[in-house]
Length: 357
Image (cartoon, rainbow, N blue to C red):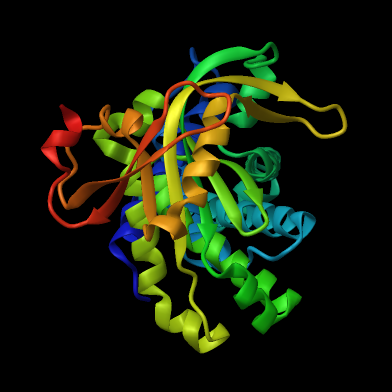
C-alpha cells in the first residue's frame, strides 16, 4: 500500500496513541479489578501487555482497514463491528497471555487455560472489555459528528455563554464546481465531493485545524490564533491539502474525468463563539472576520490566485520556507472603515521578509 508522507505522519502517531491507550486501559482495569493494595506487579504487567496488544491491533485496524474501507457504513453497523472485533481480540489476548503464564511456571497449559475459561475470571474479563469497547467506540463515533473536542466542550459547558475568542479561518472552495456538477450529475458529483473532503483530512489533522462547517462543496476550517500561527500551520494546511489532491490526481481523472482544484481565503481576528440550537446543538462563530474571510476567498479567481491571505494575518506569521507572498490588491468592505490588503501565497521561495516588517 502506497502511503504519502503526510499519511505516514498521520497514521503512525495514531497507531502509537492507540497502543499507549491500550496500556493505560489495561493498567486501569487491573487496579479496578484487584485493587491497589492487593495489586501484584506481575498482574499489572500482564494486563498492561494485553492492553498493548489490543491497542496495537485497534490502531492498525483503524489506520489500514476500518478507517478507509468502512466510512460509508451506518453508525450501528460500525458500532457492532468495532465492538465485536475488539472484544474478540481482547479475548484472544487473554487466552494467549494465560497460556504463556502456564508455560512460564511449567504448568499443564491445556488444563490451566481450561480452568481459567471454565471456572476462572475469563467471562468477567471479556464482559468488562465488551463494556469498555462499547463505551469508547460509541463516544468516538458520536464525537466525530461534532468534531474532535467539541463533545467535551459541550459536557464541560464551554461556550454555553457567548465568549470572545481569537480565531483564524480558512474558506476552501472547489473551482469550476458548477461545470463539474453538470457533467457528472448529482450522485457522482456528491461522491466526487465526498472523496475530496476525505482527501483533505491529512492536512487538516496534521495542522490541528478544526472543521467548522461543510457548505455544499465548501469547507470552513478554523484554528485558535496561537495554534494557527505556530509554524504557520494555517498556511501549511493549504499546501498539505493541495499535495494530497495532487497525489491522487490520476485516480480522480480515472474515476471522474476531473480532479478537484480548489481556492482558499485566510483571515483571522476576534469573533464570538457560542453554542446554538435546541433540536441540533453546535458551536457557531459570529463576527466580521468570517464575512471578510468569505469575501477574500471569493476574489481568488478574479486575482488569479489559489490562496489569498489578509496582510493583517500575514504579518503575524513566522517565516515559512518554500512559500512566497505577493501583494495583490486592497479590499474595501461596506461597513468596515479600514481596507484589507490581500497577498497571494504560492509555493516558491521563503515568505517575503517585507511582509513581516
